[in-house]
Length: 355
Ligand SMILES: NC(=O)c1ccc[n+]([C@@H]2O[C@H](COP(=O)([O-])OP(=O)(O)OC[C@H]3O[C@@H](n4cnc5c(N)ncnc54)[C@H](O)[C@@H]3O)[C@@H](O)[C@H]2O)c1
Image (cartoon, helix red, strand yellow):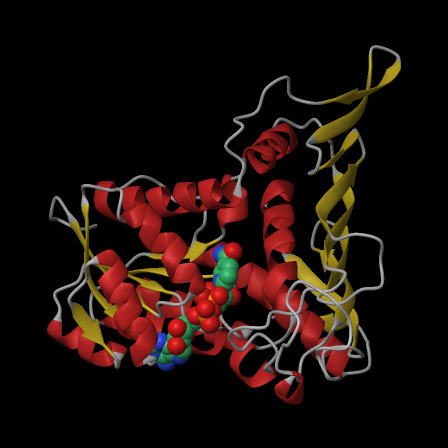
């Protein structure tokens, strides 16, 4: 835990998500945004000017060496998460790492091991567990309202939403496509809601049919993605089995031929079930099949609000010692599931062990 009253924080990567984070951090009197690092000098300059940060580095290693930081937030492409987070932890700096935790499970394991060795804090940027709908359902599961969870359906499906910025289509830099980029959000909040059971095996199939073709053929929000470097899946479908016998089906896509985008999960337990959107529980009560919804949920459910909650929770964890609900161990379990799904797809869809 930081001993100072203000948290001296640095950013590694200052692209889209970093801006979302910095907006929240800028509202905290107990956070000093001391330095920022990005390999792109133009981005670095724009962010430094926008947030009034004068210490700017094109090499994050120099930033770690020269600035006395309490914490960093890692907001770079997935492949660099492990390298940057591990170096920061070894330099005695607490870390918030954006999702997915890493590009592979092996990298995520090294991160958890380093956090243990160094005693530094490592938190994963899973904002969806701060969503009031997730909290409502998590508490219901915890209270036994669903009984034993048997099955879940995880869906993160875009009809046409291949990012036309960043490196989201490059397997080498991201570790995968929609599954690791947006599937991870719904998977992590489903797993959290279920009570984080231990995953044991997985199987998956993946398909690419739009992303690797000229990207301006059809009208869509993010036309013009870099189709020539596109090396990830368009659609991933998989199945994960847990130690307690529960099973999850996952579907994730940047380009699915469906009516409308779906970002949701559903759980089916022995005593009840639920959906996330709308947050609704289905149970037998008093001789009736009942559907129930909370009469009021904090209306602050928007994207930036979840980010606010995530950033405040990180600062409160490292500066004030409050418990985190997004520990690195949860990030690792999610990464192991993603990793196994990718390994299975590479192995022709056969069941592989989660490790
Ligand atoms: N939590 C969320 O909802 C959410 C949303 C979007 C992105 N993300 C995650 O945030 C990360 C970044 O995504 P983004 O949308 O901000 O991408 P982005 O492309 O907008 O920004 C990434 C930035 O990192 C910089 N960068 C690349 N390599 C670097 C290095 N070695 N050292 C320093 N800077 C480096 C790039 O120049 C760029 O400015 C990804 O891991 C992504 O999955 C999370």
